[in-house]
Amino acid sequence: MNWSIFEGLLSGVNKYSTAFGRIWLSLVFIFRVLVYLVTAERVWSDDHKDFDCNTRQPGCSNVCFDEFFPVSHVRLWALQLILVTCPSLLVVMHVAYREAREKKHREVAGEDCGRLYPNTGKKRGGLWWTYVCSLVFKAGVDSIFLYVFHSLYPRYILPNVVKCHSAPCPNTVDCFISKPSEKNIFTLFMVITAAVCILLNLVELAYLVSKRCRECLAARKAWATNASSYKQDDLLSGDLIFLGSDTPPPLLPDGPSDHMKKTFL
Image 1 (tube, rainbow, N blue to C red):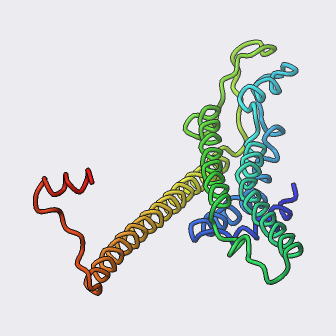
Image 2: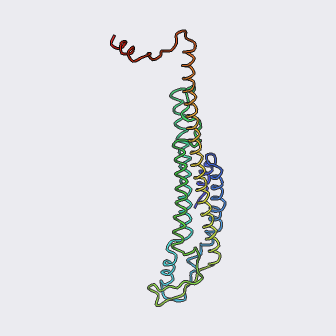
Image 3: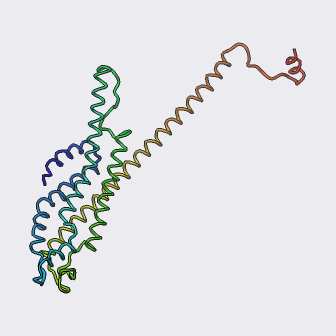
């Protein structure tokens, strides 16, 4: 599989990511994609050929291998990496959509018109929601695949010997996995890096949400301060009007009778 296309596309995500996002991207490419390409495919390349069972019954080895390895580690990791990196491409596509819309607006309204977006790559409005949803999706995909791996291979460990009694095996046979220790090391490495990626996604999500909450609180506080200052200015201006006028402000009548007379007249 050619991963250079994904590497070229995801390199543009660096410009629109936070510090946590850049760390996540580096971790994905250095410790997951490169390890997958350089070592994992070679380690699992002979898993079916070197899966031996102590029987000569035709088809027994194939059935036992399919029972214990319903899905290959390599194919699961490839699907996981594709699904994890796709949400980052949506962020790049959203920024490209903003830039195209800004360009079209300038062509229609002229170069001296106001901008639709002060900064097309700044996480505001819909782009903020796209980025947040991508973080949730990436963390969810990694969590689901960790659960799938744990369901297929308890504790993510491959045993040295597998007991198999499926037909057409004549009885319970022992099957031996090729290089189980080496495969366990790479499996645990991929699991740990996926867990670290989930942690980085959650930390970045908390950072973005807390930052937006602080901005909203600061905006409300500034609005409340401006509103109170406007009210004080209005009261002071009213007092100055009465102080600067020759006629005193209207007062209440001395008695209720005077008020009644004026009302009926």
